[in-house]
Picture 1 (cartoon, rainbow, N blue to C red):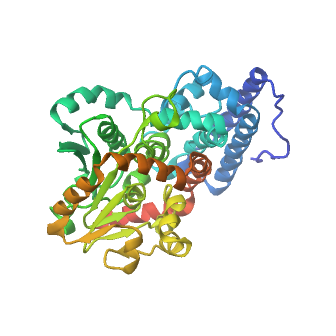
Picture 2: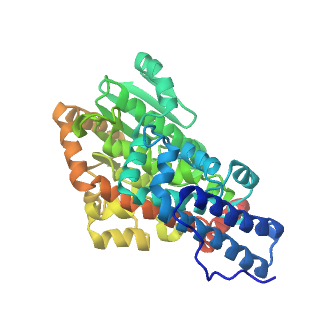
Picture 3: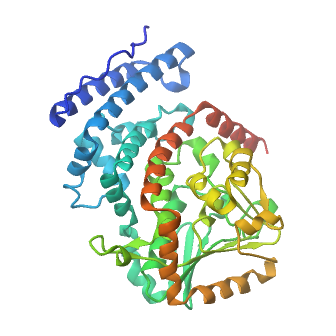
Length: 442
């Protein structure tokens, strides 16, 4: 079997209709050869090399097509930007409107149930489109706006929440108390680790906090967990659920990009309520408090980087174990150094350094360190201090100065592609498999 040579550029003409047909032909040819190979789980080394060449040839075609047509593609998918389409729907529509550009529903369904190591890397194909869209200033800004709007689930739940002040979602609860709304993680079975369900629930909770006029401050905290070592204790978050990553249930659109464009960005920049309004009135922004019990690891620590007040339990620690996990810690690389300085940020991200609450460096990442029995009082005090009307206006200006939208957009464009490659890289697959095997032996 001879691998096809990658010597010629895809024969695109800059005419969208013609190039759409060409893209479909090129990717369909690669897919046909790929389907003739054994499943990835049972390929030998030579067959896998051939598969890699086929996949990369199709990706070259997608990149070349988007280099010519990114804005035209987005305009057709959004009725010339008259509609704000969330990312999962956008990818699904793109698969139908531009065959071969991103994976079809059938292709994604065919890999459902396979572990990550046995998949072809379809998330990379989705990332190529997302990266191209976000690199375009006009298109990227419109997509970011689409993801800052309230989700349909949030709007469905809003009336009941306004009336009762309480909502219990599968992995999150939201409870209004005075001027605050308390968002509590309750993924107890996995140390409040992040999975697709938690990310979706957190976005609903964030929307409700920002839409409820009775709420002035949001509070984020982990609930009690089931782990034998921490039984009954509150834990902020263990970060990404690596078991789910190994099992192939961490999604690209819903998790890897969805958390950054969704609840985290809404906490930082606010909820978009009127896209046509002036900048200062188009979003609802409120201050956020984080209460860290026990630890905030990985994605848990990333949450703290967008909050306005962080209170940490005396024996807690913070970490971004990106080097150990092999993936990129979300927007941690963008946000951490402005709090800690470049040298400490490198120690945390590249070397896995833990910051304990009692370390002097903890003052760069948290506002207050308190014993466990004083946490509730400290949170209430922070809520009172942040409830004044001027706080929301000033945090809006701070966010604008610290992380301009174009900086966020251009970072996220590259993050989308890099992270999609990382979750399919052999070193990451090997690490999550080793963790999985260790968990089975315990």
